[in-house]
Image (tube, rainbow, N blue to C red; front, top):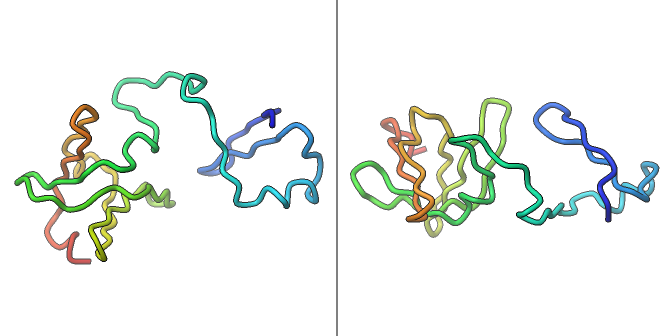
Length: 121
């Protein structure tokens, strides 16, 4: 399908697809994934990245202990969270400069400095 228009709405984008002209046409697309060729993505500024680029990265604390793997990002009104999974455990790590010490795309790892108690929640 072809993207006809996009506009920001809160922390999301509202899109209009060619051929989808009313709510009844749109209902069948609820929950569908939108994919864009990587070469068609707009360039990023320094220190920016797309969410998909960190999914699958291993997460370590500043002492070198492995915490888990980023399974997905969860945008919330208070800020984005990395959802980090390690077997049956799941950690929610706020994506803020005070906690994210380094994102190493070459090594495929994220280094975090979690405040005391964050990983016990």
